[in-house]
Image (cartoon, rainbow, N blue to C red; front, side, top):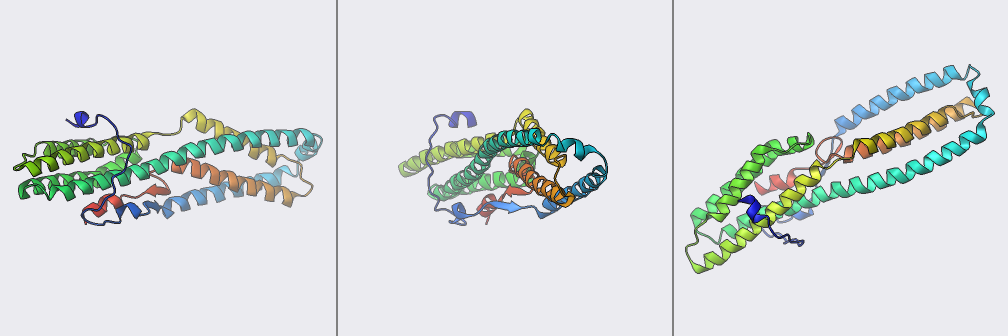
Length: 281
């Protein structure tokens, strides 16, 4: 039944003026996980302290006297790898951030359509209105209870899919009592079809992730940059350590943003389930 309703696609958003919070589309639906951020920050500080200790030990060896004679070659490598890394990282972030915002948009569109189902259901018989509202609430409860966690683990939630299929069935099986209700019933079926499209798009975008080979390529280039700056023959050890620490911080933050935004439901910066919760208000 659900597949039958997900036929031709429309690329327009029907503004919501429905039940609950009518300002749902204006919510900023992101939240910060400070505990996860603190964990990554502590790990970075520990690794930076270990690198500083290793740098201090290597200054006592002849390594930097050797690399001083290869300064021009190191400069060329740092510039070359740095430029390639910048291009690759910009491309990856552009794609990932686009997917992240797409998930937010599809969440808002799906919730607006669900709100429209409840709003237009009031024009049917009281029994049909209660049936549709109960089916919507059951689906929203399922989405809040298990689907958010499942999407964070990169898998589909069967319970939420079953609840949505039951919602569509309830809408389609409504028996209109008057000609005006028949017209409204057709409108509700169209809204249910559109809701299914938004849900399918949300799930597809949520399960999309960076190819592992691309992550390894970006990580390899970042590691190469760190290594080249680590062995670069600065005249003073403090200048060398400071430059290495700054580069390590920038690359750490870049890697953190790349990996965190790749999963909109798990990590530091996540989409929120508030638009779904507002439907139950």
